[in-house]
Every structure is written in C-alpha cells, then in structure tokens.
Image (cartoon, rainbow, N blue to C red; front, side, top):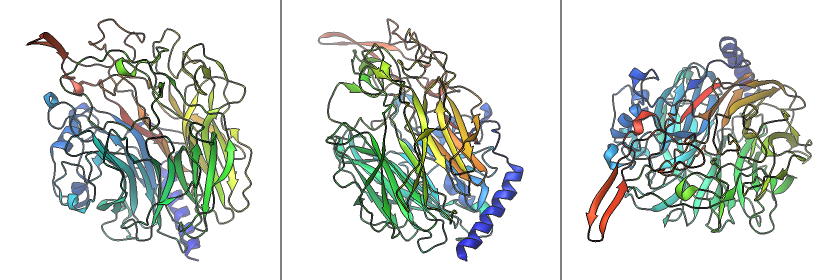
Length: 635
C-alpha cells in the first residue's frame, strides 16, 4: 500500500509538471555553469549553498573567482526530484576556482564539485559548489569530513523523501604537493523543513555533511591505490530497503588490475558499510553503474578490458537480493567490439613555463602500466605519432531500472561499442580496437531480466550510416525509457579512420551534438529520435595540461520521471579559439584546436648564459578555457 500511494503521488506530480514543461520536443539549451560576470548575461555568478539554504550572505575567494572565471567544467550529472519534476540538481567537475589566488599565481585553486539548482524544470539554473572546498569558511565547512584539495567525477541520486546525494572522488593535497589521496565520498543535501516536507521546492537544499566512504593511498601522481569511476543510487521503492543509499566505484592500484567495490548506507548517507569487492577474480574493470528494481534488489553493471589477465571486452552484472548487504557472483552478459580511442604517444619538447595553467591534480592518469599507448592526443608532451588531436573516450556501460515498475525486474543497459562490419585499417597509429584499426561507434541497447538472467539481443537505438555515437546514458523511472548520447553524424570530416572532429589534414572542426530517443514499450521500439543541442561543439580544443590537450570528461547524463526527461552535457560553444604563441612553427592542427591565451616570453641571465621561459596564461578570463555544462529537455 505504501508503494502504491507513492506511485500515485509520482504520477500526479509528473502530469502536473509535464503539462507546463514538455520534454518531448527540446527547447532552448540552458547553461548550468554561470561562471561569467553577471553583466555578461549568464546569471548571477556563483552563490554559496549556505546562502541559498539560509538566506545569510556569505562569499569567499573561490566563489568570487567562480563568478567571473569563464573556466572549465566537464563530466556533468543531473537528477530530477521524484517529488517535484520542476526541481533538478546538477553537478560537474568544476574548475571555476583554480585562479582564486590571482592570475600571476597560476592555477593553484581547487577543482571541485559544482552544485547547480533549477526550480523551473531546467530552463534556468543557479550555480554553486558543494560545501567543503578548501576556501570554504561558511558554517557548512565543519560538516565535511573531506581531507583533499580537489574533487570531481560527480554522480547524483535522490531518495523519495527530499534528500539528494552527491558521490565523488577526491585527490589533491591541500599542501600543494604532487601527493594524491584518491578518496571517494558522498555529500548529503535535504529539505530544511524535514523529510517529506510539504514544500518540495526546498528539497535537496540544505547541506548536512560529507562522508568519506573509502580512502586511497597517499602517493604522488595517483600511483598508489586510487578510487575512481563512481556510481550512486538510492532506493525510492517504498519497500523494506526504502531510503538506502548505494555507492560503487573502481579501485585502481597502478598496475591495471583494477576491481569494482560497493558500499551501502542505511542511515541516509551519514555512515556507510565497509567496502565490498564485487568482481572476485576478474581484473581490469571500470564504469560500474547501480540499478534498483521495484522489489529493492540491487544490481551493479561494469565493463571489463582485455588489457590485463584473462579478461575480455565484456559487460558483467552482479545482483543483491538483500538490500545490498551481499551479492552473488558476477555474470557475463555480453561481449562487444570496443571503441576505445587510442594512439601511439610521441612526445615533443615541452616549453619551459614559469607557472602552471592547471592545478597539480588536474586529472586522473591512465591507470595502467607504463607504455607508449595514449588515450588522448594534443601538443608537446601530449603529441601522438598520427598528428591527430582528440579527447579520450572508452566504451562504457550505463544501466538503470524502473523503480516504480511492480511487474518486472528489468535492467536497461546502453553502451557505445563498434558496429560489427565497420572496422578497417586507419592507415596511421590511431585506432579504436587496438593500434591502426578503426570502427564506427554506435549506442547499443538491451534489456536484462534480473529474475531469469535472460536478455534481449543488443541492438543499435538509432542506426546511422555516418557518425560516432559515444557517452550514452539511459533513464527509466515512471514507465518510459529515455536514452541520450553524443553523435557526430554531422561532422563534416567524419571517417571511421580518424578521431571525432578530425579532418584528413589534421585540422579539427565542430562535430558533436547530443541526440536522444524514447521508448514506451521497454525498449522494443525507439521513437522521437531527436537532436537536442542547439549548437554543435568542437570537443578537441586543447584546454588542459597547460593548454596542450583536450578533455571532455567521461560521461553525459539523462534523468527522467515518466514522460519528463532532462539531459546535461559538456559544451564548447563559448570557447574562444586562438593561436598558441609557444608553437613557433604552427603544428598539424593549424591552430584549429588551440585556444585563446596570452603569454610573454621572458629571458633571464644565469651563470650558464641566458635562459628563456614562457609566462603562464595571463588572460584565462577571456574565454580560451570557457568550457561549460549545458542542458535541455530530452525526448
């Protein structure tokens, strides 16, 4: 009866909101990350969550910098409140505070989790940060257990009582050394009026702490134990597991034999169980994702790689029938042809630079044994033999279940793999299935029956003759499936032999749109196949590693309830392109991947003679690193 009442309430809310905010036809793209001056017309800058929740004014150097930063954001997450589809929360890896000590000091500030909030179904957003970042002196700082200077890889889940949970990894040393910690944590937000409060517009507003669920090892440059590739879900079924919070991640150990771990919380994210290894003897595992079915059963899916031991490129699933307390053995569901962009590393001389354009713990490493394999390519130390410029991407699996479907125990999965029959030689060191072999990436879907172990045959949702489909996601609550992915079908230089957005002459072009589709019959047929983005993006701008290599993150996100759906993605429409003055002879991309930057070449006299070095970027606020998170309604 409790679950039946919950379903009725959810259905009523969905009808009320969808009548006002239709997601069947995407509207205008909305910016979640308002990190530019209010006079520039992109919102009110960044506001402390303490101020949002209490009305008491508060700011600090990081929030002030975020308000004007025009900085970088990637790896978005977004989640709709199951009690109010007008309320959405979003997040990302947010670099807006890295110049919080002034431009001459370089990028020494934090990369942190964004906290973005919309009360109008995603049409506009207020931007903030999850409390606990190094500069945070608000009363909320004391509620955080975090010991790190950076945080990222956000994932979000709601329970059914106005609470929201942000999962994350964190690494950087507050002392500014190369030492990294590799922790994972969960931050908690609630309605200040209490659980199940009548005023749902306050759901997920009040921060009430962050809990570290696993500690990594204190080692330089992520070479020790490091936790990454996070996933989170909460039980909203109204059953005996209702309110439980589940969190999973990949545990990297420096030699590629990484495993999948899991914890649960039965007190709304305040404390968590001891980490449990889910993957037994399997090795080289990434991209866990958690699903909860109507009866409270918990499923975790993940991908294996061929790179270590006996593993193959495959999707696995594990099941718990006791609210995440124990799990059965991992079952292989399907194999696939990977579409993992890679090349041969071919480093070139690195210009000497006075201060860094990036924080010390900018991004996770390749997490593998030393080799000449590169997952992304750009300039200087990031150059590759092929001469292409491209962002990293690997085939990944995303999964979900409809917690309100009392008739089935179905898990819905999407993954971006190579279409059989499309592989061929690239003629270079670039490849997607090993060096020199390329294929067309497509978004595949299949439905897994947790009760029987049977599954439908994987099939491409939107089969196209041209274009790669990468970074898919899927959402299911309320009887309708919603899938989204990045799509390069309109890439004017598309070829299976080259990276996304790369032309034969090594120049780069705008090439990515977000597409989506919907299904009302559990994935048997997909309709409303729609381009969601208003502006096509060039994902290959070199905005990272001292403006030398692109980075798009590792995922996009879609959230839904019934026919309402909303998606968020990384976007480069605001990036200002320009030449890199350190390239005294322009390289292969002919400045099409370079971003606007201002540098001076300085010379000092030493005992050994004159020594020249470049300044850091003196105009980071001018748009060269203006990477953002945008969102829109999804079909």
